[in-house]
Image (cartoon, rainbow, N blue to C red; front, side, top):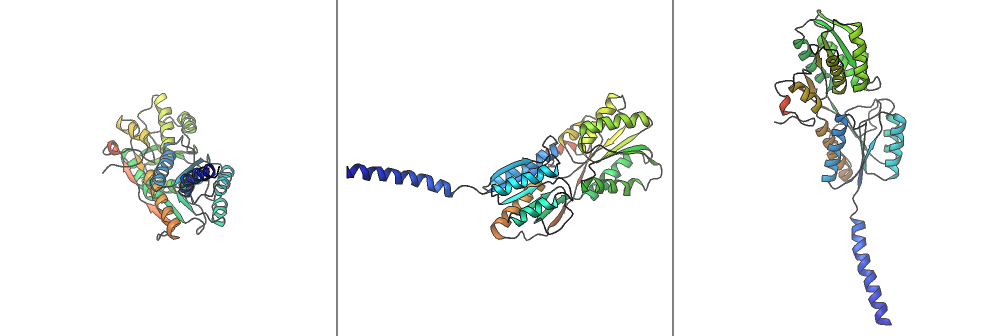
Length: 313
């Protein structure tokens, strides 16, 4: 009987020995919160962040706020309750997101922002964004060149709550407005949406059939605008986007949309995870909070080198 009991205790000890190390080795977790992956730019961000986090040994929570600040706040609550070590965020509004990032900071969880800034410094550890103004100037310069420095054109704007929408529009106009023969006939928001851009472009065409060009705040709207132009038999209208998506790359290669501006979404997201990893391990990144990444013009000369928001060397 004593022998049987000893054997049973030994078996339990062996079993526990197998379980306990695996529990001790459970990976820390990072939350990745972005707008909808229906937009390939945001999907590239989430994929890039998740790949780098897993490479560095973290588990990941990939969450989607759909540009809804209230939903974003709830996702932050979920991430905090899950005990994540860091949050990678492409936010749902420059002003509206400050409270959520502060809430995480108060809970001892650092946030690392990508793509979009918030309006308060010192709340997030890092804010890594594309140099939208520089990129917009590149796109506008190409647009003016393609238009022959003259003609009526329309501009499609992004979400009003997104700082990037305003920065890109300013970058466009600081270049285009230098050419007096470039005539703006319409400026409307399509809220970063392809479907909305299609409808807006139909309305603009009806009101301004003389239009010769469209400059768009992102590639998704550019795709919607071009589809509407194509349906109306107006493939002669010059369209320029911003983001550097594979969809627009393919359109450029096929002679449709003429140009876009690449912002390195995948690389940006991976940088944020690397900085999060360093912060988790050392308590600092050694880098300033706000970091700008320059954009690259994409046209017929280099579109073939573009893949998933990255340009092959």
